[in-house]
Length: 256
Ligand SMILES: Nc1ncnc2c1ncn2[C@@H]1O[C@H](COP(=O)(O)OP(=O)(O)O)[C@@H](O)[C@H]1O
Ligand SMILES: [Mg+2]
Image (cartoon, rainbow, N blue to C red):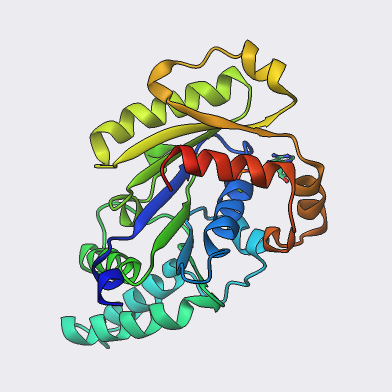
């Protein structure tokens, strides 16, 4: 369909304090979006701990960072300096590092880049990730804890910023900071908050959420999510659960 070729991918990024449920919710969102076989979904793990790989049941062989380091070693050993050669090598490596599972593709970033060094390699990688994203309908980025370390290579193109917090004041404070920083750094279309692991509607009612955080909804504490994580099973295998239904509602709230 020529129409879909021109359609810009929606790029969703999940950010928030460590342990609030970014990886679980990223995998759930990938599950929901990929349930339509016409949707091509690229999942990007931007957390060095690569937890999304387990949550999706897609193993990682090489991270973008591994590829970057290999190229840097080649450059340092004087084996490659030609830009076209570097580009074709990176292009090939990136596509072979991308794991596919039906209509889901998966890419792990690895460790965040060091600022200021190897600019050329970093720029090529950023362009490659951006051009890869164009082949998908949705890109879901499991972000790192704080925006300070947010990986600029992947965050620049974000269209939907999803802030994740639990019921704690600390969690809310972190997303407030992330929102403030991203308002300057990212040209996103929509941003919204998902409250995760709440006990019930009563608990939600008691929480005072700053209005600028635009709460999309809340996800209940869900034993299925917990036990799948304990067993290291993929969230893609969950048939249905209250958390999945709640995430669907949040996505709808965002117009997705
Ligand atoms: N809605 C939920 N119900 C129950 N357990 C959850 C829920 N969301 C996340 N968890 C659990 O909380 C822990 C942290 O979640 P995780 O997604 O790894 O957080 P993060 O990626 O933000 O560090 C995991 O053990 C996960 O299984
Ligand atoms: Mg995580």
